[in-house]
Amino acid sequence: MKDLTGFRGLVFVLLLSSSQQRSQPNYPEDCSEIQSANPQAYSGVYTIQAEPFPPFQVYCEMLSDGGWTVLQRRTGDRLSFNRNWEEYKHGFGYPTIDLWLGLENVFLLTQKKSTTLRVDLWDFEGGSAFAEYEDFRLGNEGTAYELHVGEYRGNAGDAIRGAYHGIDQNGYGFSTIDRDNDGCNPCIFGDIAIHQCVDTKHSGWWFSKCGSADLNGEWHPSGDNIGWASGLHWETWKSVPYSAQASRMMIKSTTKCY
Ligand SMILES: [Ca+2]
Picture 1 (spheres, protein in one colour):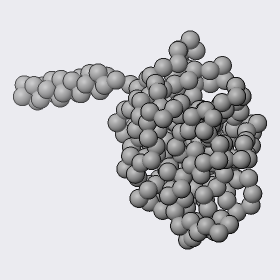
Picture 2 (cartoon, helix red, strand yellow):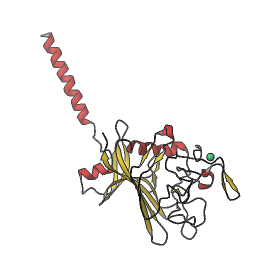
Picture 3 (cartoon, rainbow, N blue to C red):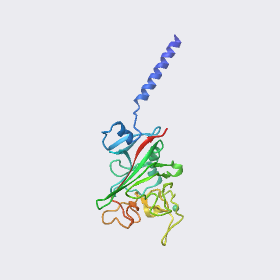
Picture 4 (cartoon, helix red, strand yellow):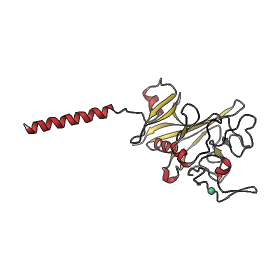
């Protein structure tokens, strides 16, 4: 009889454990998975999770070519992007307005799946351009969240690999006001010696001898947006330092890797 009681107890514990597991919310892994499950899903804020890490909120752009998870958005000067390592690591801003999703979250999102990065740019004259990169991923924090991009397509030019030789940001670690991974020791531009790209860019980014791309610089208004060392720069799109009116970086997952 004692044995039977013990058995019943074990069954009860197993059932309880099973029901507790079922009561845990089962969050999707990214916006692509949300759109695959529900093709009618609207763009907006969703909760996703890269298990076993805690869930977090993202903005999903549900477009005809996929469900895109937004990593970065700039639309004005309400939010400063001149921030330190911890802030860039964990993210800042607001999912529906301007935001930086956070290097650690992007690292987690790009570990299990093959992802495409899309960069959208808008100028002050009604124009826009885009760049897409296959096989986008970040290294872990130990690599300073090293940037990896594959094949480029688009009409904005491949500013990550640079407007000229020697400034390729692909394979470079992230730099902030308190972390220097920019390859300048110093860099010489004309008669100016730069030790930290962050000093002139006022931005965290994967600087490679400063390079041609930086969408985290200071936002400048219409009529005062040309010629700044800092700005929302994509120099294969606008060769004269031109700070864009708006930018957006987002990813979609393509295939699962097991
Ligand atoms: Ca340096």
